[in-house]
Amino acid sequence: MFDSSRRRFLKHCGMGLPALAAGSLLSEQAQAGPLEPKRPHFPPRAKRVIHLFMNGGPSQVDTFDPKPALARYAGRELPFKFKTERRTGAAFPSPFTFKRHGESGLPVSEIYPALSRHVDKMCVIRSMHSPLPNHEPSLMLMNCGDIRQVRPSFGSWVTYGLGSENRNLPGFVVLCPGGFPVQGAHNWRSAFLPGAFQGTHIDTKKTDIDELIAHIRNPSIPLEEQRRQLDLLAKLNRRYMEDRVADARLESRLESFELAYRMQMEAADVFDVSKEPRHILEAYGDTLHGRQILMGRRLLERGVRFVQIWHGAGQPWDSHNDIEKNHRKLAHENDKPIAALLTDLQQRGMLEETLVLWGGEFGRTPTVELAEKGANSGMVNGRDHNPHGFTVWVAGGGVKGGMAYGATDEFGFAAEQNKVHVHDLHATLLHLLGFDHEKFTYRYAGRDFRLTDVHGRVVRGILA
Image (tube, rainbow, N blue to C red; front, side, top):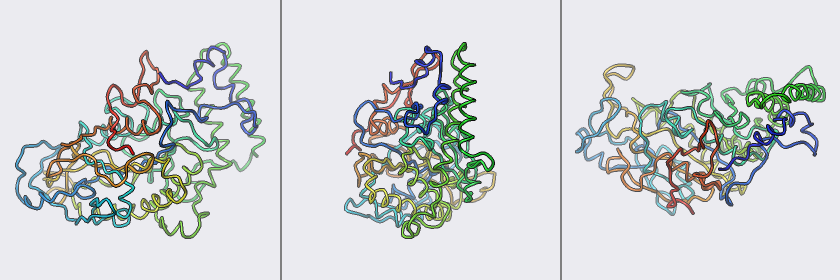
């Protein structure tokens, strides 16, 4: 079992993490907290992750998995039986054209003109699949490895295993504009892992730094006085803990106090993208998604271990109708910023050690949805949820670029060749980060838990 937590040791010493909070974290002799950098099981290919989450489920047959057979069957039923969440009808060809790009010749939809120039960096996994078509369990599976129970998120596992390289910022940051998505903070919570590994949510729809990060500055008490207050609080809590079993909630609360104190020194700077050179600002674009993806790069550059960037708090990619209009608009919003991110990471020498993951919680049907009620009733220009076959892509961090791995059937409904379950994806990304997913565990409630539960295999075909 891999368990770098000091809780058990400190508990036997009668101290717990409150003792760590007592010393000044500005001192070179400061005690290290739970986010100190740690070594994985073996030398990693990647050291950090940026997860670009296309919330709602982008359509694979309209982005990275072209299916010419749909045009031949347009307006007709597909020649096999299949089950969807809602009633669907005839084959629905993509309204977008695909062209081959790069030396690899990978086809990409016209809605991603800037990103298509980077296909030789990307491994497009076309054979993803999962068991359920609903947003809630699918989000939990993609983010936390379980469709039912609240489990630690992927980002929490990574920061638990690797720590962070910057003690003035959270190790795991979530950029999500407009509030919380479906299932809220469950998507990035630490669950039974110590609270220090939970994701810190930032609403990037806000632009003023004092609104972006609430209470980032204390206008009435200087840092020195805050330090003395925290030291006194730690002393009192240490006295409280001397005759009691370590309290994980109290430890987490004290860690959050310390982190909030330290963030005053760096957080305001890292989220101020105006300090970037003009050519960088122009490359990402002065848009919500341009700014938040640039923030993501700035966080990674400053040692944050895991950054997750959401394309909206609702389900913007959930195109049950008007898929041509909606997918074109959504792709336009992040096409230029994602392309700029890949260029930027490569030019800074960071791409080789950064895993870039793009995708949603599932895909969409190759057939048209026939809504019987609701806002899209009577419309025949959208697609239903489809977990049986969908696409994600990965770049950097030891992944083979310029390749498509796996395949769906000729219509794009279900994964057929080299199928990749979400557990397999997690196992593979953990492998690239230096972990054996079967040994990367945390003991809780009498058993050893892991991100991949009792499943998962490393997809070695995508490793460089």
